[in-house]
Amino acid sequence: MSGGNFDVIIVGAGFAGVYMLHRARAAGLSAVVIEAGSDVGGTWYWNRYPGARCDVHSLEYSYSFDADVQREWHWSERFAPQEEILGYIRHVADRLDLRRDIRFDTRVMGATFDADHARWTVTTDAGDSLTGSYCVMATGCLSNTKLPDIKGIGDFAGPIYHTGQWPQGGVDFTGQRVGVIGTGSSGIQAIPCIARQASHLTVFQRTPHYSVPARNFQFPEDYIADWKATYPERRVQARNTRVGVLHDFGSGTWDEADPQWRVEELERRWIKGGNNFMYAFTDVLENPETNREIADFVRTKIAEIVKDPATRRKIMPMDYPIGTKRLCIDTDYYATFNRENVALVDLRSEPFSHMTVSAMVTSTGEYPLDALVCATGYDAITGSLNAIAIRGRDGRLLRDAWADGPRTYLGLAVAGFPNLFIVTGPGSPSVFSNMVLSIEHDIEWIGNCIEWMRGNGVTTIEADEDAQSAWVEHVASLAEGTLFTQANSWYIGANVPGKPRVFMPYLGGVDTYQAKCREVAEHGYRGFHVGKAR
Image (cartoon, rainbow, N blue to C red; front, side):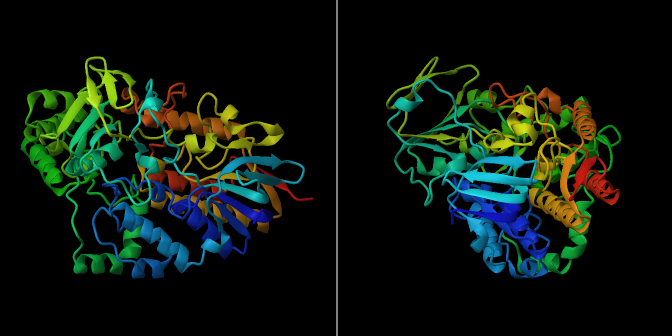
């Protein structure tokens, strides 16, 4: 295949791209998916690092649009491992016969809008040129990997791995001296697994992270049967929550609760496991005093687990509110630092100097290594979009339009870029929600919009600049009313040098957001400009 003309061109074959293809087909539209990987899966195709698993209850981290798929697929664990989630997406692609319309091992390089013909032209690294009436960016929020900038890293003779681009077939670290840079979510999952293999593991910590126990378990058969029997009701309930997950949501603030009950409730949630822990009180991310109490509880737990006082001081998060960086869930992360073959290097007090052929050198020491693992994250939310030369009206690049930070209307569309849709884009709940639930919402909204356009003789739809500005301001004002602005997180792009500091996700809640999107559609796509065919 080299080119082609389509109704819809979809970029990415993760959860979003797979469903968008199915949705387009169901509407009678011709569609194609362009995917850089060799298979479906998106994040779950690339993130094959040891210990990789979801932090959302697997029975909820799944599609709801197909009752047969819900009934047939059998989830095995509370927090499904990467290979099981990848198997699930492959099953859906096969079950719905989607692969014949997906071009694998092909990377999109550019997308240009032709205003005269109201069509997008998409080019790839294979030299293909495809045209379509609509372009859907299903590129994901965490897909543009970021390597650390360390002097001499190219001189290192050993292999260097990024958790987001892990080799197929895995890596055997047996007998090796391994360094891991980064203690965010992927690092916290990988470190215990690597420590059990490596002869010695040195963890280079840039920022201490809060993590709570996962308490993962195998599903009993009756548990799964109950979920499957009540799936329709549970799905509706989830869409009417703040995060799209059926957490055990507390209903009051810290101050309103009885002092003894507070401690008992935190202990109960700690024992239960999962990031349900953060929802005990309604003001955890708004009230500094409440946040401090929750953080102190977690710090006390860390102190009980980590035995060495020096390591305990290094690993203890102290200088940002809990939850304002992604809260991690783990299995034996803190306990791993009690192993004799594991050492923790605090890069705040002992920064990197350079790498040699066989070692990492810091300001105060040298650490011999046979392999290096970079759990250094992503240029999140906007990185995968800015990596593509997306040109709208008058040839303007999206990355130029976003030079001061991303600007969208509802996270779904951008002024000056007609018929371009973004799934879980900046300005939507995205990473503050069950991603699969939010993906389903966005795909259904986009699909309904395209069907409305075709039914009403509309050839172009484009976000209004004023409506977009009002939405951007609304998203920013919500963040400013919280503690999130007190942390240098990837939510605001702080992990990427030179990236504008803009809080990107929408904090108003999945329920509020979806109601707003529904209202916009019901009022003839208010806040959009539409162009009629001649």
